[in-house]
Image (cartoon, rainbow, N blue to C red):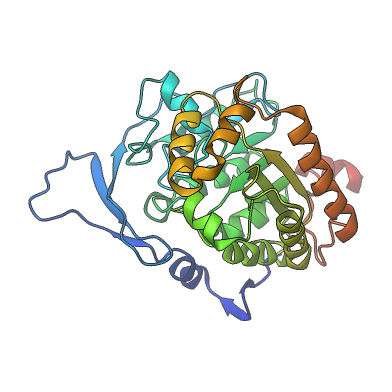
Length: 351
């Protein structure tokens, strides 16, 4: 069963949602710019209307859609794109770029690989007898709803295949374009476990502008959560990463949790900033420019490794848990969509 898409106080079609939520640019190239047949330039506009340097999109087929990982809460990540034009100063993927000998500093996000055949490969991999319908984590290394998705629709294609294979999905995004695919998400939620998590570490507009320059404003992301929940989809908030001395104050955390509760968030989790090599250098350079008074504190705090000291992490977690209990964050969907038994199981129940 489908429910109307709600954005603010309006009922919108999916086309209107795409226009409303992703008005940030047009596919084009400057006069005289020569591109290879598999390359495109996208002139990205920030949400405040300022034009950003163009990002180059390189269309390259991949060899596999799903690659198993270890040491993570999930085994099967899925990323239709490599690279992200959001260019968040704290992005942990910059560390992976260092390992791959790619630019992790200002050049990160200016070139994005588009896995043009990812949905086709995914269908093949999910159809194998060995596939046991384990959780697939979508959007672990790049945002699956960055602006390129408006053109390529690879995330949508992957979701359709995952729904067809009745495979559980955990999706993480900062992109309001997720509402374009609300019909596919509803189909998926009706046949497998689905959780959508929207990253929202702060409501402070100045912190947002300085640390997440290519993302949608915080309040817009809250409206996305409200729309998903109203449509019956389990959707919550990730307060991550929380930046010590910048976005981890009790007042700041309380504001996010209260807003999440008002939006109907079904769940909430948090994490403190990590600074592995690659992320560390870029973040500290940004910190020196935007919050120079905190530079020495951060250097001391992260002197021994990528993680903040246990005392910092514990204090932040306690603050989040206090607010979570205060606001009783829980699943309160009025019309939740839950997985139905597989067809074979339904036949048995009818006997």
